[in-house]
Amino acid sequence: MNIEHYISQLLYRYQCVTVPGFGAFLTEIQSAQWVESANSFFPPKKLISFNTNIKNNDGLLANHIARTEKTSYEYAISSIQYQVLNWKKELEKNKSLTVKNIGSFTLNATDNLIFTPTEQKNYLTSSFGLGSFIAPVVKREAVEEETIVEEREVISLVTEERSGRSYLKYAAIFVLGLGLIASVGYSVYQNQMVSQRVLVEKAVQKQVQNKIQEATFFIKNPMAPVTLSVKADKEAKLPYHVVAGAFRDENNAEEVFRKLSKMGYKARRLEVNKHGLYPVLYGSFATYAEAQKVKNKVRESENPEAWLLVESL
Image (cartoon, rainbow, N blue to C red):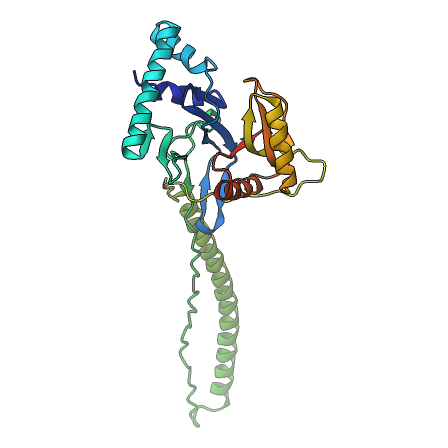
């Protein structure tokens, strides 16, 4: 029986899905991301992590398989154990393992499991149908106005000496009339130019709006997330926790807590969870970026099993 499909179904509904004898898949919600430099938008999603320390059977996966397959609980447990055995054999043989729609595992030099979640699946049901997209930059084109120069015919007056003063009088009246007509015509011409300029500006605005409405959005692989941090006051809740481990024995949890405090961490202990475990934290943070930075540093230096816990906001 292939249990990958059932694990994937449970990740939509639960924050923790334990595979007995192998480890637990944990989910945390990441807010929508906007990458300004690339004009890209990424919707909210569930990030998947893995913890090898949580291996005890909580009954969630086995009961789900038993109900779906309409079989016994014992048969579901046996199927899970058989699948886990095959996974471990594949890891020993190939040093890698791929769990469909969930992620991949590799063994490092110290035989510790390194989990890489898939980027193709979003287990946040509220984001169903949403995908990442790129909004093209709208280029505004400058429209040059053409200046129309109207050539006017030069009127030359030829005066004949024999015409006498009467011809000069009529010529003067004619020139005055032409001047009045020209002034009126120039005013009409200016009004026409203003009207044409307004029409051109309206046409340009309409073209810009059409370009905005016709922008095509393309779905690409998500880029490295950029977290938009918001300054919070000192009394704000710290929902992001870097977990050092979860212990069945409270004395062990207290010992690790004291050790981390001596090392300079702002260590904390949480209340016992529904699995009967006592979580110990390296610290709690106001933003995802701060918590992620500390988690990566701890993983590289001393504890590759450190993971991130996000409380509901």
